Length: 228
Ligand code: SAM
Image 1: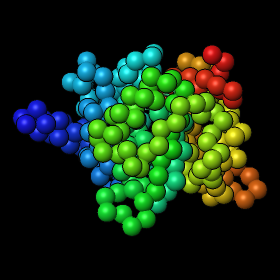
Image 2: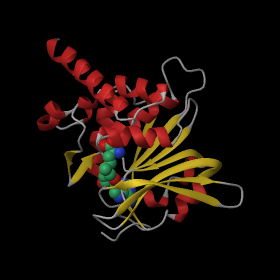
Image 3: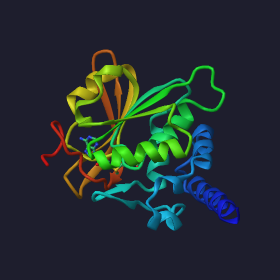
């Protein structure tokens, strides 16, 4: 019990720190970051670092992003109740849970849904388990596969979130699967350094993209990503 309260207190402090650094401003994102238990998405050895603002290893050479990056991407996407979201790069499942908490809050009469794709089978399976343990199984569908192809079965999406760095441009299947008026958040650039985070808006006859900041993500590997 003391252990549980400790996590809640640490989560509150993390959220206060993100607010004071202007990474968190929107009430719905703040509420989600206060509620989703990040420690339930980590391997045993990393649990004590759950509420430090840092990326952490989740196995298979992959990472869970730093909380400030989760917050920034959720805010940029302007997620709202009822949105249908596609995430490319499930990893631990934590970011998908944050999105679900915003698009399908408790007692919602119009709950949205999150579809999330992971290329590593082992991570897709453990993310499914993490999401279930944390209570998000009904609002997040984890699919094992190449996310650069998107998930046409449920398209179009209101919002698309890519959590691995794409080589230079947005994979064309993702552009196609975004609704007109929809937003897509993606890091692009080289395989390791020199990446930039973009927010892309799909207009009726064009795409508008805005560079937000320099970032560092693991590479997006797949048909429209980097070769394996
Ligand atoms: N959103 C995750 C979380 O909350 O833990 C963190 C994601 S991690 C930074 C990026 C993930 O993208 C890795 O798990 C990696 O295996 C995955 N990935 C890379 N290329 C992919 C692709 N083409 N399709 C699906 N997943 C991919």
